[in-house]
Amino acid sequence: MTASTVRIKLLQAPTRDSWLPEVLANLETVLLDHSHCERKAASTALNFMFRYPSNESLIHQLTQIAQEELTHFAQVNQWLTRLGISLAPLNAPPYAAQLKSQIRRQEPWRFLDSLLISALIEARSHERLGLLGHACPNPELAKFYRSLMASEARHYGIYWLLAIDAFDRELVDQRLTELASIEAQILETPFSEPRIHS
Image 1 (cartoon, rainbow, N blue to C red):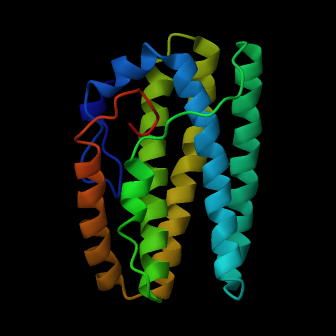
Image 2 (cartoon, rainbow, N blue to C red):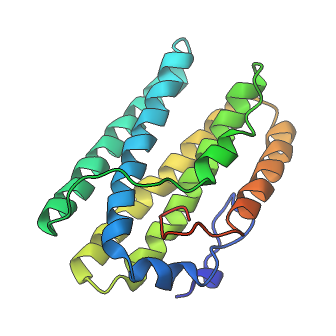
């Protein structure tokens, strides 16, 4: 499987073919980055709950996502321990920051943009963990990556469904197209170091 053969709902462009060999040559760093990604994903779900505490559907569904992301965070950290990799900070690629810079400040557009950007990030994670799950030379680690794919797909689906529950479908589709185009453009310029979202 190559990156160009993968098509994920919501994403406008697949991962470039050069990404997979780059990360396979730097698996320890990418695994550490994966730990950071899971922690940030849990934080994102929690931040939604703090910002929109009266949205019962959001609270119910994102509580589950936050719990799952923290479970994944613990599982990735177990892999780090197993491989003798210490937790450490990493330079973050501009991917998430550039996407989040597109969030409009006023409500309800802030809510819509935040949901759709979260959906896009989860969709890209789903795609890339799937690529690693098929190509990782460590069979057990590859199996672990594949085990995360269903959760990542469900997560991006939940963020998207929350958006279409709260807004007109045509409006959601229009804004998603705009943001997905920006997401693809951001990844056209690779980060200098391999990352999950480089």
